[in-house]
Length: 168
Image 1: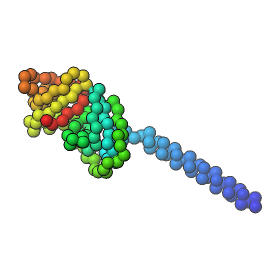
Image 2 (image 1 turned 90 degrees about the vertical axis):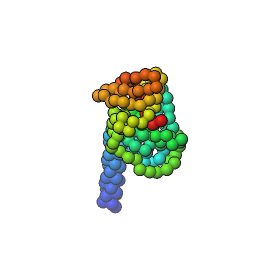
Image 3 (image 1 turned 60 degrees about the horizontal axis):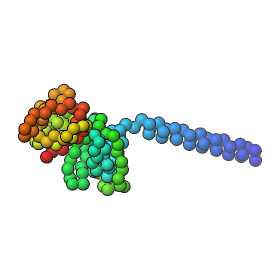
Image 4 (image 1 turned 135 degrees about the horizontal axis):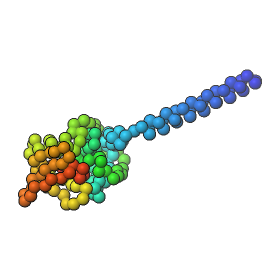
């Protein structure tokens, strides 16, 4: 009987030790996730999200995640490219609406996204951290700024001031 009791105690200790190891591994895995990892998961799971950036918010689902940019498809079907550096919060608005693929890679940054606009000569709506939004055509992308041509003016906007962009 004593041998059986000792064996049972050893098994219980081993099981307890294994549970501690598994909990530690799960904690370590969770602590090593990046914002980009979480955004990709949100997109794959199809959550409707409220994205807050630059004192404003948009509601939609994530379609693309780059190195420092995400693309949100709003309920109106508008595709908005948002600088992840400008994010101030993300709130899950609902459970899974659809599961789907999330693209990654190009465009990976806001600069890459804006260079696409120069090539296509499309008109864009640019929301900035502060100040009014600018509607116009991106005519040049510099290392740290963009030039936007509007109906009555030429704007030079630091890239760090760009919160989000959508095609108009």
